[in-house]
Length: 256
Ligand code: SF4
Ligand code: FES
Image 1 (spheres, rainbow, N blue to C red):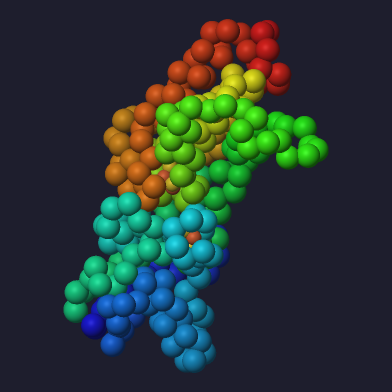
Image 2 (cartoon, rainbow, N blue to C red):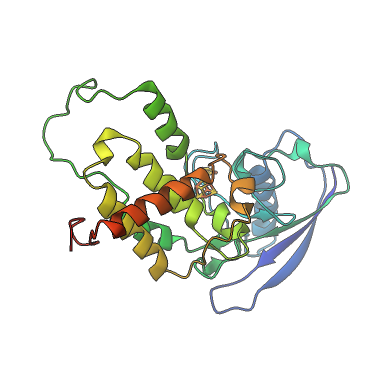
């Protein structure tokens, strides 16, 4: 296949940035999208040019490292996959492809297609965990969990923190991500003791970052590679409201 790529190039956060055009010959339909970029980068390096910076690790849709916008859609138009799982057989000879980074105030561009998603880490640090005593591992069946709860929690635990939801939201909202984390832990028995505190702390941490508010566009759900449901946002709002009505504080989750 012959392809024309229009790729966003930006040296650093201060650089204005702009699109560069690259012509590619002999692109195999068996390549993944990232392999296609690897080949282009190899070529750029051989020519003494700066390769295109993009994030990746597992290349199998698990780690959440990869992510950029392909032809205007976060992770590309193929539903339910990350950009590392996108293959060139989804494109046709002669196609023009536009590639650009996540565009969101809360995710400043570091270089080319790489953005700073540490805002997600700060939200997780605020409460996206279950506190346990260290020591010997408990027996796997020590805490009975119904199949229904386990399955439902797993639906939300699939979130890989890629940030596509934020990038596709006209408001740059992080609610699908935060809703997924709060729902995942709130559906398990181990998550109950800190449930109120978790909702308060994570929502308040989200509000300290430069994310917008949810207006029910549902663009997040449409592009999420893990098909996370916006019902997680409803669960998050419910937990947050319940915690504030009960007078819990972010500091200790107890009554004011
Ligand atoms: S909710 Fe979906 S789109 Fe958002 S970070 Fe998680 S996996 Fe990515
Ligand atoms: S590189 Fe790990 S999800 Fe894409």
